[in-house]
Length: 149
Image 1 (cartoon, rainbow, N blue to C red):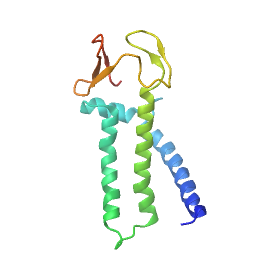
Image 2 (image 1 turned 45 degrees about the horizontal axis):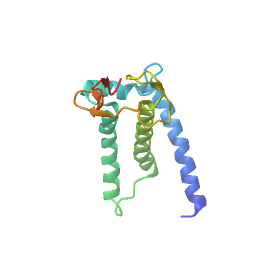
Image 3 (image 1 turned 90 degrees about the vertical axis):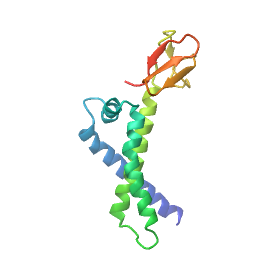
Image 4 (image 1 turned 90 degrees about the horizontal axis):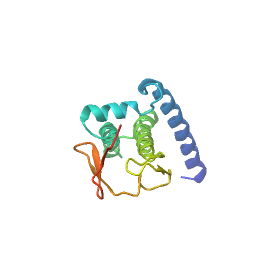
């Protein structure tokens, strides 16, 4: 494949991704929350929104694995590849958005200082997550805070 051919595929994929994520936002977002379904699914399942997203993504990954296993005998049509590969890409972008949401500047629950976006964690304290209870604990002062909204 030439670089030009690859660039065409990349450009087309980026356009498709932008189009699909834009149209699906109207269907799945609630108000201003583009990630509403994952927050709601996480609460419903008693898990993090990211874990709920992985559940949704798994179905699409199985389709891609089945697509690859059928090769070389069955070469899927372009529309099928667009859909299956696109679904996985879109869910990974949504996962990135969920993870980015966790890093947004906020005030530390312990010291009340604002935490810059580039900080590796919400504060200088060492937080230990408990995904079964949905909270994390500071290893120093044992304060707790919710892991997800």
